Image 1 (cartoon, rainbow, N blue to C red):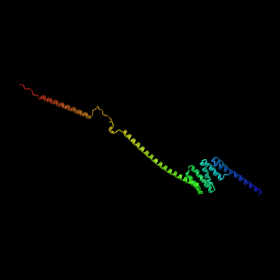
Image 2: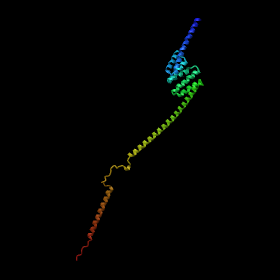
Image 3: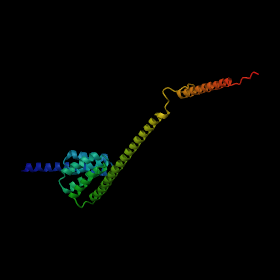
Length: 240
């Protein structure tokens, strides 16, 4: 019994020293965190985790230091894991709250709304989570309204483009029609296949000339006949 008691006391001393070392790393990390030395604080919290991988405080503070360095993607995964393995409602609420903050910073607004709701399910009196939830919901509403407005604007723009395209096609068809009409010569203006020589007499003109010649010939013959008749009808002087 005596030897066992001594061994138990030694074990208690070792655990106490081990716990003091962990707490020392955490205290130093918190002080560095408060001084905005987030990289150094991260390292202290990692040192504490190496000594106790199940320490919620070390894990939460490590995720917080990473969040402060604006590595939101990494802090998102850490806080999500903490929220899933947290044993108390308070731990879950704190983890979901910071999980929501990491999402919000990455503009994952819809996901952050759900995270803040989970934080409030575990701690309904958390005023910070209520405020952040309201902020995220209002922003989400605006985003959805803007999305609808953009859809409407895009639809109107498509309609305008379609109208413009139709007008251009119609104008192009009209221009092609005008060009075709200009290139097509009217039939009454088309040149005859065998244009008439201006010096060449038409059939009608030839007939008129022939008729005129015949008339002249006729008149000449009539004139000659008259002269002959006159000659015959001359009185012969009487012979006494």
